[in-house]
Image 1 (cartoon, one colour):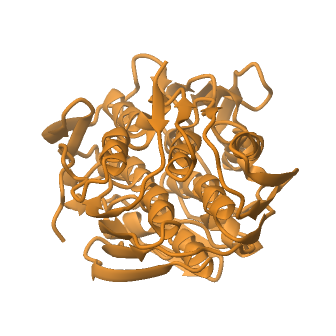
Image 2 (cartoon, helix red, strand yellow):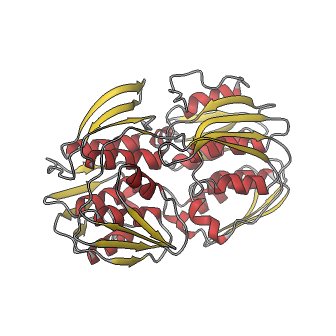
Length: 450
């Protein structure tokens, strides 16, 4: 079984990049695959999740020329030959692996095709709810069968058909649901509108616009007119702020540390994690260097110090949901209470992230109270080493590797191969941190200049 063995460190002083953004890599593979012409996509994340999405597009006739690779993982730069919105039928069911993003967005994309598609995933993905996308897509006329052992779960059999546009009020704030509806709307005659109850990640809208598709936003209503064809272009994926969040917490909680994360995405719908860690007392300097691809990219400098507890605001939760496990680690290292509520969505991620975080923190000496929709953590008690289980959840595995950097003794995080679904190279950066190296980018992670 793969595992991380982690001990406490004295210092963290370094500059390094993180891999390409996972959310944007999924979308780049899809939208470039639908485009008219050949797009060059750089700094693509060669994680298992994103490679499965790329493979799904290839299975539907999209040709990919690899330009650069991360050894041992896969392509980081490639030319994608778009199909001008006309995909071909796959010859077998499509494996989405562990990726809810991949499956939900692909369902929106395939619902309006002229052929049948089946999407399946691993055990974890097969237990996650898909009704949140099959309901609105069904309102558009999509015919989708949920074939899983659990009602409303994958595998999904999608019988492609002509769709009709709708105005859909999202019951919960979800970038995945919004994106599935907008992608399906591209294959309709007329205007499709998704109305969100709160701001969510807007990568789909930004990327569609960068590929020449017109999007209209009025308040929380986002509209797209069907019949538009994305136009091929060169696109650079920024570094992933969700991946950077692990190192942000490590640096912020270690007095005297200084860390610069290079060329990371600074989209305002993704940087709530920086706002929270700043509110907890860290000094964070953000420098935007480019907005050429519709996404702000820049450097983030973190200066470590003493942290204090905070309360996560209800409006922040949709844009913090992936970072809550590592924010919980920051909370355990901070003085005072941190309140995390309105986050019931965590229970239907790769694992039940509320119970898993609570149990693992308690095993390491953390004081935490569990609620149905979150937890309250009382920080300040020293953490001690323990053997903790990731349950195959990449963000749990990485969050507790960071916790181990502050715990007395050797912490063992079990079942860590799952980290490759989002962060290839994490183990090498972790090893460099443990060696207290000043040069963490000492492996084959391409650095894309701004």
